[in-house]
Length: 252
Image (cartoon, rainbow, N blue to C red):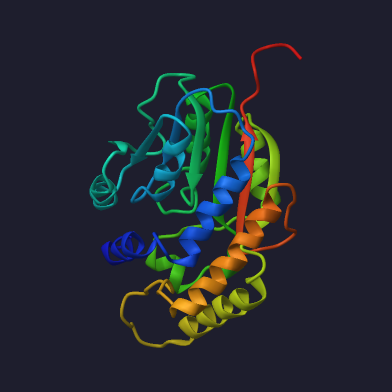
């Protein structure tokens, strides 16, 4: 990610509805899963989701970007290490839960190699939670600002996990309530960018702190989505999330 975008994420993710809503969705998807051992947030960014995971048990954050890692260290109390997502510094079968929060989406990430590494590091019966961006047709200035390289359809990402040897327990879209507003805005931004004839300034993301009243309203909508996600799925949305399990070595 561009340094500017990393700094924005760190400054806003505590209260901004988008980031806070993601954490609510993570908690909803993981509700009821037994935590026997280590949780690993691969590509932990500046550590907000890792901070959530450590409340339920031992948790480790892995991040390759030095700026992200430095900001995560400022939170204090987090166990962190620098590592790429296709070469995890973990023993075989040492993790009980691995999370990939908008990791597969990024430039330079080998999706197949990353999923293979996650499977190797997970214990038999361990869980993998993947959140990522949906629909390739929505690629635009925001994605380039944060070095996004691909977006996923739910079924396509499900097939990738299955090919990597996972059993997908849940596959759903999210960020669904606002999709009717966000999708046209992203398509318009893509169209306007394509019509520019001269080289303009580098693209910037559309992440900004809205007025307090609007932020509260949007976060309330994200909380409604999270409540739904505890037991149900969404048929469309601008993000996709999958919960998968590494098969157990024990016979059925």
